[in-house]
Length: 201
Image (cartoon, rainbow, N blue to C red):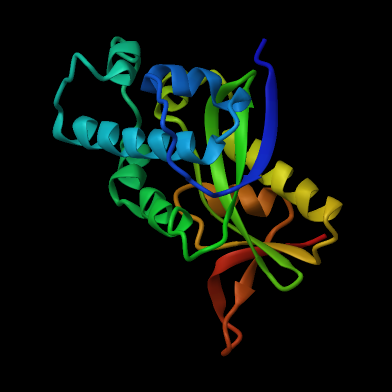
């Protein structure tokens, strides 16, 4: 039985003088002090891995590809969502030292499962870039990652007295999931449906 929990922390990827293997980072990120730096390592590694999958290449040194060998291939629509780069593009903004973001991370024990970025905008807590680890996409150990993370963000917003949560430009199946959780699509200045979804707390 998975030991599912969520943690939230500010993004501040200050480099460390010591380091450890990427596989160990995945397994222990929930217990380390500088989670931001190790999250950056995970994001870079996931991006590199999805590019290897996209090109159909193998890498004996990539532990993710080794662990998912023999697993059922990812569905085409999932791969398409990953290949667009929209998910990983959010990392550039989140780890820019000029920006102020927090991370809501989903863990199985101390092991990385997925995360989403959050930031303040007045009484609104915004979120974007929700994703599951590539390992979890293949092995399906923890499901549904998106609902766990959205529920955690909603609770965090409630605990910190935000007025609403706004999900910025969700992709793939996220709009349907958000609607099932009581979110509604925002409207633009002309009163037409926009790309974002919101829910009042």
